[in-house]
Image (cartoon, rainbow, N blue to C red; front, side, top):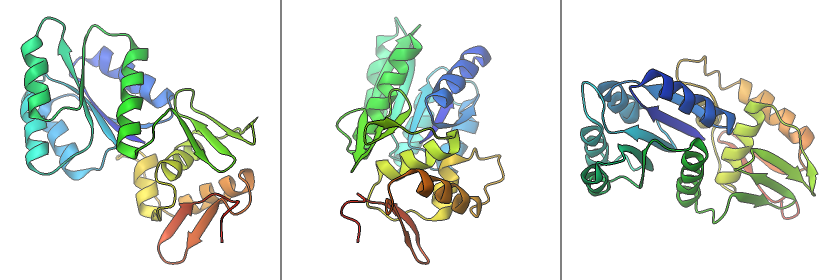
Length: 223
């Protein structure tokens, strides 16, 4: 999944980016409100971690502008522990959850997983497609109960396909979700990753829809 981290404090921002990336996500970062607002307007994210105390443009203003523009990605706001008014204002502005500073990184990751599950209509951290099981908490994949070793790009690709199983996803859309915005998003390399995944997954799990893209299906029911 693609996550945007908005935090002006450099050390915390780096910690958040590292922890979320280690959980198997593609992470973008912004250090001020103007940059955050721009990224949220022009890029598609599956969720945002948004600090409210930002320079140039405060987090509440960023959130309100996103919602006014129809940007409905889940947003987890970070607030000062004593500022209960910020929590209320954040929820009223369209936030989906909040976390008070200081916090444990595991709690933030758990709340982020919950937002992603709700967004993708997954009821638990365990995602299934036939014999394939993806554990979003441990960033681990099993097939028929056996561990499946994947590279980080292969995991990100499979996670997006599983989150939206049955949907056709274009190569461009897949590339945008596994590469950072400042990377060379060559959608042709998606074919390589799909080819590698096909060799590791049960036959027929990833279908090619000619001219449109790929979709993940239960290999036992694939046409």
